[in-house]
Amino acid sequence: MMDFSDNGIVAKFSGPLDQFDLTVEFKLPARGVTALFGRSGCGKTTVLRYLAGLSQADNGYLSVKGQVWQDDDHFLPTYKRPVGFVFQDASLFPHLSVLENLLFGQKRAGTRSDIVPIDDLVDLLGLKELLDRSTHHLSGGERQRVAIGRALLSGPELLLMDEPLAALDRFSKNEIIPYLDRLFKTLDIPMIFVSHDTEEVERLADHMILMDRGKIVTTGQLSDVLSDPSLFIAEGPKTSSVLDVEVISFSEADRITEVQALGGSLQIPGELGGVGSTHRISIAATDVSLAQGKPSETTILNVVPARILDIHLLDGARCNLLLSVGHQEQVGAKFLARITQRSLRKFDFHVGQNIYAQVKSVSMIGGTLRS
Image (cartoon, rainbow, N blue to C red; front, side, top):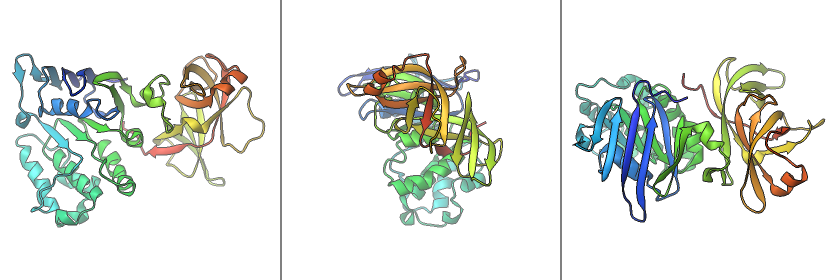
């Protein structure tokens, strides 16, 4: 559940865009990472600019932690908003070293205390060996880590990122994401990032705002949004669900870790962490097959009792089924399965039915979760 008791972000904006009108309204908690996700041109960056005060909506309201930044009679200019903004291009000062770029951000903080002390931030972002370097000699991933560090040292009460990893190749993304994952778990401020990459979202976000043509389709916990079979985000070939799990045992002989999800357990090859550690895993919808009864012999490691919660037809051939771990009436962890409509008819699968899900592959995508 999202907690708004400490007055997080309350936003309401409307105004014209190129091909349609933008009308959005949302509330977010005062801590955690929210992904602003949608097709290109749906208005994601415009919303970010409204939040930063770089653009002004015709009609708008924004309060952050109880402080009103915009309403009918008041508009706080960008330079007075305690906002950190990270763009797709790192935009570092070329004549300054890495350390000098970081210290420039710190100067903006003024009387506001640092969100993270500079020494801690340097460690979290892995910048210690880079401090004396010229920004000309940094990789794309290193430049973005410096840009994020500079933004955080400005003492923001809100961190905004506009596709901060879009300009990076896959290798650079894989290099920077663990740093961001570790950093975001330590921060006590709200963060909103625009992305069109579901893998980034699965790894980094706690919440999601899903947009389409200037409107919000839905907003909520990441796991709930990703597992909704009726949303357009569930129609793609890479549709996945995320589950938060806890390590309950490890077999040294088999090198298998058993993890507990809500409603049941799963087994994952390799040693994931100590007993009691919490992680995020991903299950691709196309990696789930279904059976009416429990298969007696199979090489698939995870044969999970499951209950069908919803069925959504995608086209003439395929469909998504929303499943809940466990056969009990209480809803367990939710995940999607992608099967053909032919199989749906052949096995007469229906909502409320207890079945078995064969999960061919489970990927760990996140380390210890936020407390």
